[in-house]
Length: 297
Image (cartoon, rainbow, N blue to C red; front, side, top):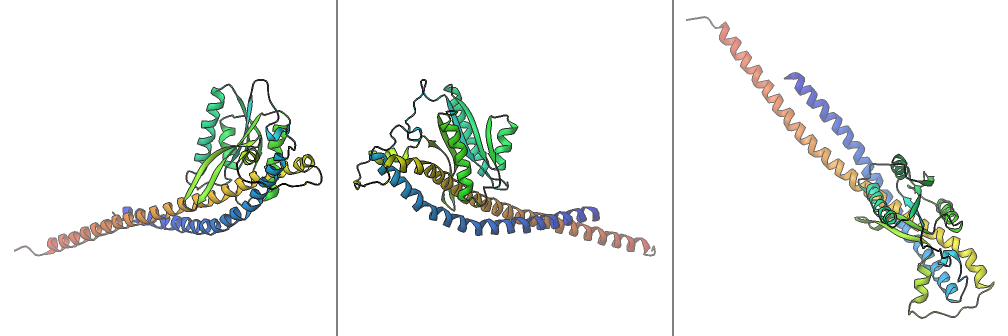
């Protein structure tokens, strides 16, 4: 009985130590969500403005045959699709990575069933490990960017995606990441990155547009802006993914802390019961010994 009680108390101490770790990780993730959300909101005006500029350039007839604006046609349509996949470098984030991977695999099944080939660009150690272990075709992998992405990180990733697209290695590039809607809501998303759709949609809208004069020519401006536009979209997605990762980790660590509390309560009750049984046994042994020593008659 004494051995069982020692084992239970050792387990309680172990769970208490784990609870301290998960609680600390929960607080760290919660503090990082605020900063990540601020970065998401700060990046939106630039992305919106560069989208507006490209829309106006496209409406002026600039680079109508540019590959990034859908000017490149293939004889048999889309033959190969590139996937830019944003996951995390660290785990302990609940279903964050699994949800992105599940969305990618669903899109891949559709492409493969349609006879299209694929190639992957992974950002984050978790995505790289998953797809490499299952022997998917990976063109490039990046790590160390998920926690605090910078624009230079996004530009590096976007350059690789543009190299594949402009070099004709892929006819379409899709980006898979987790969209940050709020601290309590994130949504895994697969969106087309190249050729660019947003400027075309803006041009075709009924909203009034100003008449601009461009210097230098619209084609020259657009040629420089398109890579920056792609980089801005990738950067915005990386910021969304970073905020979503922190939110998912905060929820996961809170659930782990709550579970540790419940386990400690359960083990404490079991320990109390074991201690009570031990005391009862000792009392009965004392009483039995006293009865044995009592003189007969």
